Image (cartoon, rainbow, N blue to C red):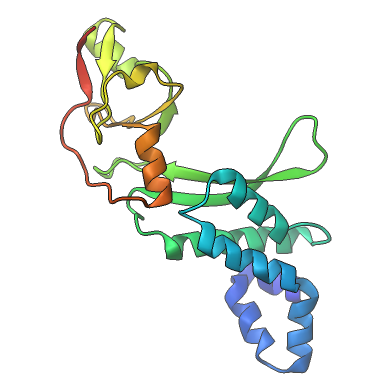
Length: 201
């Protein structure tokens, strides 16, 4: 029953069950051990501050075995809810928690991922490397110099990766340094209206 509650009603129903009496509290404690509760609290403090490896270790501690699959999914959804509540830049970035299979590893690995949004409300930014295909088609060349739409740093097309708005004509590009600022809430990110596409090198 407790697993079904966590599957369909998330953590709020579990909290209510805990308050119904001794039996309800014992049922919750059988699933949410002090270590798991501590992991949720630590994740709440660390999200939007700590680096990804730290967040993934906290998430892994929360859903470590033994735990039913439904409860594991519900607890990861709970972390997503926690991240949403703590998020000060909801229009620009969101945090997701899920599991995925990794070749060569036993079981599924817990992953924390940040998705970044275009400030012009065009949807998610896409991670790419090099000059976007739309820019090459429009200009007839790939010999272009791009600048970050937020910090104006040049030559971000030479970075290991950048974030690009796929909406035709938007030309919003974000460097990874500015993306990290968003993911750690170090400063507010205001929309920038200028094009990021410079001239030929």
